Amino acid sequence: LQNVNASKENLPDDVSTLLPSMQGIQAEESAYLDDDKVIYVSRPNDLNEKTSRRKVAEGVDYIFDQNATKMLLGRKMELNEQTGRRAELWILDISTGKEKKIADYVNEATLSPSGELIAVDDFDTGRIKLLSADGIFLKNIGTYGGLHLFSSDSKQFAYSKFSSSALNRDLPGDALGIATYNLETGKEVLVTNSSEDGQPVAFSTDGKKLYFFSVRTNDYPLWVVDLESRKVTQLLGNYDWRNFSPNKSVLISSNNKTMISTSDDGVGVLTFNDKGEAISSQLIQKGIDARWFKEDEIITYRAQGTKGKYWEFISVK
Image (cartoon, rainbow, N blue to C red):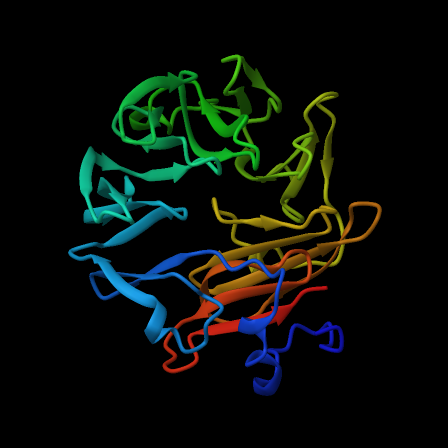
């Protein structure tokens, strides 16, 4: 594995076949859509996954999020220019197969890393709703907001904050910046105050910094804010931001030097130097469900449109 070159080439087949038997390598459960059927894979590092996959749901249009025990499914999905993606929200207990509808049309839904909370973006009201793991409403987060993000320890929450409901977001000055919300104390803090700031991308691994997208300038739209000092810094460097599509599944390395995103265009890898400057970006190829296979060193993702060898492995060390 250490001999795989750093140009993000796929591991050769003779090396890939050894991976399932190696110890100490993360192998999370995963699921993917096959038409309208949700296929659950208990060992995604098993290249011959027929023995480890099973259908757990059908009639599904979208998978909002998942962990080892639960999945958030979207049904009756609608797409339009004004509201974007909207779908009924269902929660599935993977072990029992029991399903429960927990919301009518929502734009986005995310499981906290702890698996204890669900956050929902509701376009009709412009609110972010916090639900329990079984779908019971707990409270609204802030006033109006969207594009939410949990920290890795499930203690913080970041989102784009607005001054009015989603239905009126074309008003001048409606975007207020990016806010964080302490899920333990209930305290909300506006950590940036520019209407040009958009989607939170990732918390640093220690939870002290927040990366986000902004159009304050035409170039280099990735920025970072120190959550204690509120100092905002533009991440400069040699990178093409179009290779990086932020969403709730962005992965960040333990040293905060590598970010990995998955979009419709493929798997994007963005790397930084010791000064926090972006030094390279690559769009590898079409793929979904990127995750760490060996933390900070190897990612695995599901290749789209392939048969037989379902999972690809790439060195990002």
